[in-house]
Length: 400
Image (cartoon, rainbow, N blue to C red):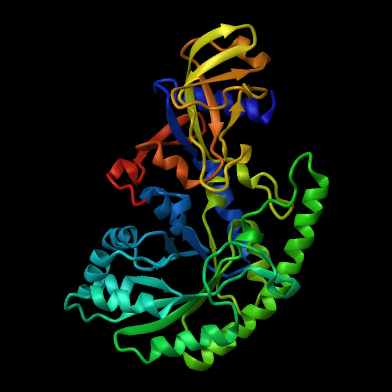
């Protein structure tokens, strides 16, 4: 029996009392992935990206382990909810236009001390001040650096379109603008190199593309390490008490951690290891989060149909954004249908051994987005479900 077949047998036994659709997290795999992130971080704390987990119980489990410290959130409403839930260090990774949330933040000393907001434009400070509604608490601010690699005099750009601040001088200017403004304090710098951390460099069947990605990423790491160090020096000249410099992501942990200027690493997808993280030379994780769909039809030889399945991930549309049939091994989508809103036909010889009511296990393309489809996660240890915990959705929250 292969390791994957053994996992399938365990998951089927563990969930035999549960009707599909059902989502699980294999705690042994989750913990092993957590240990690997800490190892690759080389002694620097790992801040957990909440958007990649979206389950309070599992955020708490990660933070209870040595080597993890703090959360990186994705909306202001989520940040405030997490802070009220007892999380004491929440970095909001994206600017917000949530005026109601800012009014709450600036009126509550506990929230203001726990939550750090992201800024890359003075207009964002204006929005916060306009939302205060009498709130006088000092707002903790993190400045975001654009990490994109610019080539040919800026005519070619590689990387996500995030912050407009690219140079040390631009970052220092914004730091001064914040420092001059009453009610704000610069405490951190963030630089997320998504074109390195979030792009696989060993895509199966595409050796030339994979080599090109590796060459691009090597150049990007060199350029960013030099520029990030200069940015931190420039900002520290304005804000000597800077508390943290955040960088990295699951796919670049060890490279970013090697930079002296970086004080902490952000990662989250590496806990669940969705399918987009199969194509990396820098690390190998264990799939920890899966979902099962029930077989409801057997249309013919080598075909079964499961209920549901149309759970695409965000990003540029493409086959790599689709969930992948994982267990039993050897199933594939019908190219004329793909994963459907209500039903999904699957092709392959393993279909002939599946019975009506049986389970087919899938891996989502991305990590936390799976939790937008399920109210609960069943936590598996060995061949048993040892706990069932709510996702954000199960607690009544869909923040985006």
